[in-house]
Length: 554
Ligand SMILES: *Cc1c(COP(=O)(O)O)cnc(C)c1O
Image 1 (cartoon, rainbow, N blue to C red):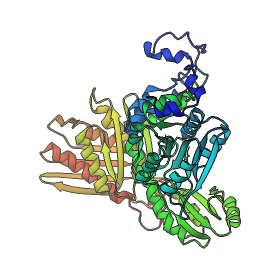
Image 2: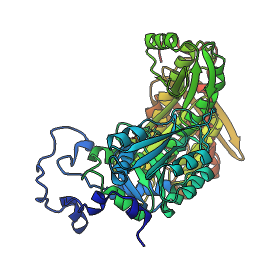
Image 3: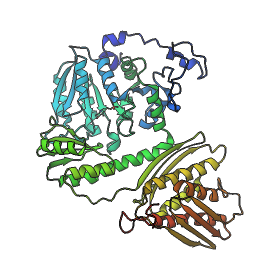
Image 4: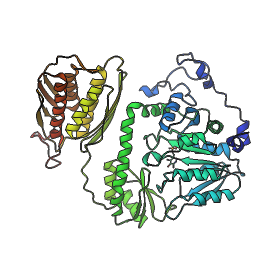
């Protein structure tokens, strides 16, 4: 029996020979083969930087490393997924593969993402629009019934969370539509799902004959400019749909950027960013509801809010004069407006523009990545939040020590390192200290409103003392000695080295003194005391504009 995808595909698509490109032979050669097959220029581009390397060569049509990373991220096998130039191109690919101009139909609910109808019309397909409920909820039975009465409906789009209203569609409602329309491919657009708590149907799509899930790295992974997305479905459907792609859908630079973004060392910071955007969404919604111009706020599962406002023209003028861009969506609702969640500072500016007074203090947060041939590190510090603390340096004892610093310092620390532990722990330990110190320094900003402190603590027979002056001038002194060479995989000689790296990167004088017998206690006491000293040193006190120096600058 022929598969549903083969029955629904345009006859022209089924008749297409696969595009004959040189890259097809990639699997037969190693990366250092002499490439005289694709009329490329042998010389690399005249620009600097690692991203320029290899740009004289054509990219892989379906880059294996990226496919593997995305398949792992979404919990499917690589043959269930085709990488596309953004989810937009996945929509275009599906419409081109399945809809014959003047003959076939697609279904969309409205209001929703405009690209479905736009790309369908571009291909000459008919569009059936089914309104969402009054409250923008998705009514599965109305949607399925309307489409079951229409002729030749090849694709039925469902967007969850829906752009621009934020409403989420229950997975069982999506599956009910797929069950009710066995001769239609239901396309579930999960572009914003990372920001919601609704489970993904990606794995389900890989198993079903008539469900495709769309994903994008634009929103959750901050890669809108790279244009990377994918479609997920059963392998045969995906192979047929992929025939409508251009020969080289993704530029090498985008492939590289996406592979880096999905690297294991980046995972924890990405998760924290998503959590932060969600928390900001929940913080902003009730505050905006107090605005005199706002009639209603809809806080759905996306990285945005949907507002209905009085007098949108006056608001547009005000926002324009303040240089704040939002998306007015009068087609969705009179006075409808979609507001993306930005950084805390950007959100504060938006609140002020809506006439809402919020007393939030400026955030003291920093993120950074530090990649070398020896280590790949991502770190995020938030000095005004005690959680989360998630540390994975690859050296368990060192994780425990840095966790002590953050816990006793009273701040959030996320740090992941993918390092050359096969050689030894030295690079990972040192580079994590540099990255952590640099992040602390950046989070402190201009260092207004902070103090200079020290802390001493006993731990059983051990006594440790740390004095710190977050002065901008690096200096480090370490007095103490260890008997053992290692605690677990952690070399004890690294302790003095870590404090030196921290002092250099943070721009601080750090004096450590430790005495006692047990090396584990001694090491731990140093890190704890450092955390306690930092806690005092970075605490905001008195006026936010006050500098703890008579020089007027730190
Ligand atoms: C932003 C968006 C997309 C497009 O994603 P790209 O990968 O950037 O093309 C797809 N669907 C919805 C609902 C969107 O809002």
